[in-house]
Image (cartoon, rainbow, N blue to C red; front, top):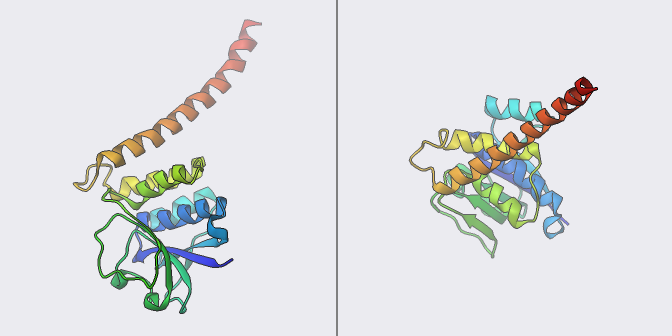
Length: 196
């Protein structure tokens, strides 16, 4: 069993942070490959990410500047060495979840590599939850949805795809349905009481 560091690019945005945070949670939930997964960041968190994590009661990812040779890593929201951590060349890239072009990327061995031309890495992580057989918690869905919205400029960016829109709508519908259910639960006892 190894501790795998999961992180987005340098000068992280919300997509880099939330994809690393939620992906590491999902991989830990399914005990993927018998490893543990730790979300990290390659710089100070954006204010939005810090607030969302604080509101959710989730600790901010540990900020790292370099990795040691042989360290297992999963890259999110990037794959180019210039955007990544110092020491990446000598680390063992265990996986990549990204939505950007493939740059100067090379590994010594096979890896888990998912790169889709969607508007956000968090869209990919949302779909991966289903592949892993995990239902996202409300908190995980909120974190992913927030990053999808910022990375796609509220689904209006030219890089936004129909997949991004569909995933966002599905997650929003779940929140609306839950809110309606909670409202109904609060309303029903009042109706019963007044009929009395």
